[in-house]
Amino acid sequence: MHIGSIPLPNRLFAAPMAGVTDRPFRQLCKRLGAGYAVSEMVTSRKDLWASLKTSRRANHDGEVAPIAVQIAGTDAAMMAEAAAYNIERGAQIIDINMGCPAKKVCNKWAGSALMQDEPLALHIVEAVVAACAPHKVPVTLKMRTGWCDAERNAVRIARAAEQAGVVMVTVHGRTREQGYRGAAEYDTVAAVKAALRIPVVANGDIDTPEKARDVLAATGADAIMIGRAAQGRPWIFREIAHFLATGEHLPPPSVLQAKRWLLEHLDEHYGLYGEYTGVRTARKHIGWAVRVLPGGLAFRDTMNRLETCEDQTRALNDWFDALADRHLLLPTVVAANEECLEQQA
Ligand SMILES: Cc1cc2nc3c(=O)[nH]c(=O)nc-3n(C[C@H](O)[C@H](O)[C@H](O)COP(=O)(O)O)c2cc1C
Image 1 (cartoon, protein in one colour):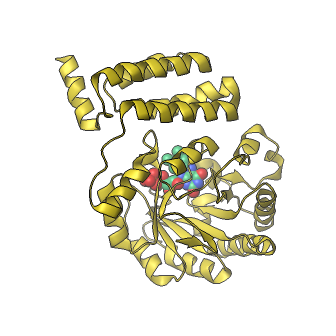
Image 2 (tube, protein in one colour):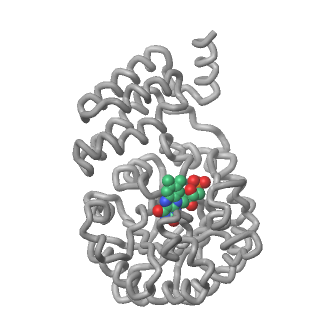
Image 3 (cartoon, protein in one colour):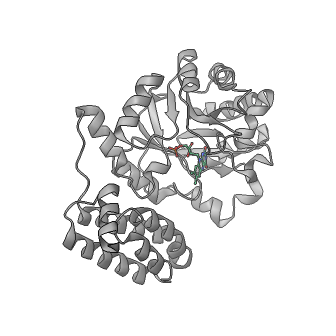
């Protein structure tokens, strides 16, 4: 699997998620089996580049290559400038966001809203490709299946983007109108794959090794991209890799191993955000990790009231150690629920 001339170790990708896939989380996903991870979107608005939020997103210190930055915006010249700006800061791949349904982005006609205006979408693609070409930086595109049910134009946009020089297309199997409702469909992803010569990535609702296998088979996609299922469970990438290679399930990680990964992640997280923001933004990652474990919901409530890195780390350490006294391996969701029921009985 290549993006342009850049080789990737495998075909399991971490999806860009604003507020989630920051550098520490991307690093963790890559350590645990993701072959590729795209940054959270960076705005094309120059006036925001100096903001703490955007400068954190453009910080790639120590990131494992390839460094892929997603840009979002509505103006071709600004998007071209944003591409050049991020290349100067280390981006080796530029991804154009035509997949995000967030209102904040869509009100300004960015993200998946661009799919409703095909000439503008293409104009943006051409401008970004032209800006990246002198640096030999490949451009990729992330999109949905279309604007709405009646207008599934992913194939048309993907074809035009390929002709304009885009080297890989990712398709999330929902329309803009759907948001995250309903189930992802993969027929349109398969149609995009059949229509293009460049690699196509299937995305949407992939949350188990079996689903990964089935989506690859149903779409013929070159790779799959996983978002929400990696929240709190970044080892899903190696679980899927193992299953695709052997047809067998990897046992869950040990409780103590999961604790180590989480604590290492938090350490990097505090390093990027500092104590005040770091403690607050770490809560969601910890919450995702513990919510499916026995006693996890109660612990999450306690942990949400802690205010320092030291307290948060200590509480997490102690809680996982207590869990390790009862379980060698991380209890599965079903087993965890059974234990909750036993505790309630
Ligand atoms: C919290 C959150 C933030 C997201 N932010 C972005 C984003 O910045 N850019 C983008 O292209 N997609 C974004 N997405 C969409 C995901 O990349 C992905 O397409 C979608 O979640 C479907 O995949 P999944 O079912 O594996 O989660 C976001 C999704 C979530 C849940």
